[in-house]
Length: 501
Image (cartoon, rainbow, N blue to C red; front, side):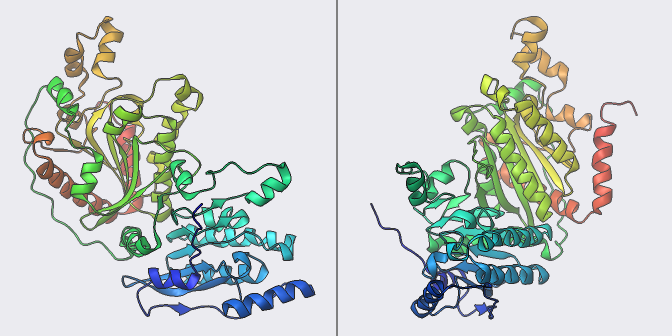
């Protein structure tokens, strides 16, 4: 088996920060109440071997000119273990970052709690977690890079609280050390579980990133997360083509074209500084739901997008996908970043598994979260919009529809089957139910329709460019609007929908 590389804290700092920008914040910190002679010798040897006084380095630097706070473990110092002194240094740095309103970049690598200090060291994870929670509650970004290895209480506290979390390729990451497991259970821990790539597959990490790529990714993430530190400039209302009147069934069939651009094409061709996120952070991920940080022009946002292509390959949108979407909503709320939802789904999963894992409840919770979200919200009805899976991402301050986007309680074939016991009248039902973008605009469900000339599949770049410019305009307008007024207008929008004037 390949021997994993331990990257020192200083090496990491040099790779991530702009050259010459590092400034240490480290000062002498209190030592634990009692240190037995053997432990004192361990500390002396660790200090002589590493040239450091503790297992944590803290300070500040710049990433492409942006000032950030940094906290990094040093594994060579008693396996990066955290005791009273290391925890105090770490908390002081977190509190300073909060007071100075700096984003925090943290890189744990540790065997966990320092066993030589016992229970008092174990309890240090509480105060570290409290400091991180207060930093996040202040609306400040927290980025985490897990190095090999990150174990125990360190992973179960500040290692698992990042807004964005990446890990070193091949890194061992887990709560229970394999040596402890084998001693307790008399058999080896199952291989391949506590490995970064496996945790990524299970939705616990956003990315597995080589150290040499970390600066670029951190810079792009911070470009989005910190974009509202300065007021956004006004942008002109884009001059977009008027949309043509098309029959409802024509829109439905065009929305189902296999070559129709989806959310991934929108991000690739219409956005910048895109950072894909992955999973719920709680052991689930679903290919049919995309979460990303991105900027449309000057406007930063969290993007939640239904990926129709991947849903057709991996299965319909299920409860895990909606829980992943709710993670993105929480991120937008905590950092006060605008949220863009993209609807493009043939419908949510209809299965025993979806029922037993709470699909209906997740739809309800998505609706509640979106209606109450303090951050600005824009919904894009990009293509198919069938059923509760589509409705779950609809509530927003502004709703934009592609010309051939549509929204319906069921696919028109399903509505026809319910009313007439046949799917043959689907086109008739689509027209009668008012599912197309033009009808949604007239009903006040949609605020703006982006033209397709004549079809997004036939003019990908031009259409996505138009849509991206509209998104930038709408997002900037919402950011510049009074938050209380914006939220009141959102409530009023859905309160009066469908009622006579």
